[in-house]
Amino acid sequence: MSLDPGQDTGTAATITANGDSKGAWEDPKDCYESGATTKKPKPGMMRRARKVEGGIFFPKPENAVTIAVSSRVLFRTEKEQKVFEQRGIEEYLKYQVEHENEPFAPGPAFPFVKALETVNAQLRELYPDSEELFDIVLVTYNHAHVGVRLINTINYHNLFIERFCMTGGSSPIGYLKAYHTNLYLSADSEKVREALEEGIAAATMFMPEKPIAVSETQLRVAFDGDAVLFSDESERIFKAHGLDKFFEHEKEHENKLLDHGPLKGFLESLGKLQKKFYAKGQRLNCPIRTYLVTARSAASSGLRALKTLRAWGLETDEALFLAGAPKGPMLEKIKPHIYFDDQMFHVEGAAERGTIAAHVPYGIAQKYPHQKPVDKKDSSTSK
Image (cartoon, rainbow, N blue to C red; front, side, top):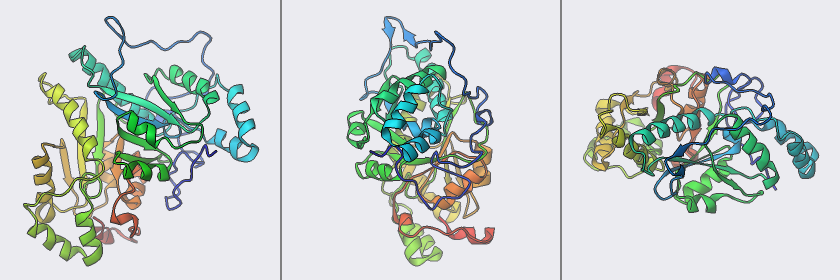
């Protein structure tokens, strides 16, 4: 049974998929003000239940925006993983039971999940009876014995996560479909690929060594365009024929919609929740904000992207066409809770500046990965 599936080996030294990068996330206060602790919970300490009139409120999966998060990206578990690798499953389970009152420290998905809960709180105020909310499912390869420690950790950090999926080493993909999952975040790139093949939006999360502080009042989600929101059609032209042919292709097909990419549905789900705030006159102070951050040029290849989004009935609050410039500096200003990109080159560049980034292993770029340029001039060749 594998409790810590294989990691991508091509990542930069500064980021890990909840790995052993020394110093990474050792001080969670760098990421969010509430911080984390390795102190034991106080005896009798209980999380306040979220209630509505008539009892505790849980949306039906088919009505909610379901976010499935693996325990390895929600929390830091590398110490426990070493026990498993060095001493085996029985000693690992024994260790978890012995330490079940010690909460795990937050992982890269923690601020994102907290932001989802902030949005939910405001949705419940505006629409008390609505089931159109974020619903978070904790997915783990762990044995059920570890569930006690996970529940204690969730209660300690005052998270509202009631749905668990503990597979005991089996693949969670089938369960994700049963949960009507809108987004799956994991540290296991192979399982992420499996999810994508099943039509589930998914990404492999990485943690920067020094994460930047993110908003506690507004959920910010940033997307790359090609092979993330859109298909990899245009990326294939670029990889096969170069930049000039890419521009020529986009000009010729300016009025032809791009096909959808793996995360188009997740942006759509975010948009539906945004419109609930707009309906209450809260467009300007909506607690959800979305961004398109693309290496496309605006005048030469941006029109097709914008026309496609408009035809889909979708929009992002901000659109940044960088014309090949590095994305890291822009993302550092945006401070998203998560940024999705299909190229590890851009994920690494974002992480170098403290952005929590997630890799979407989809499209032609996985076969022909971009190599990091020596200087910024060469970065214009990466779409």
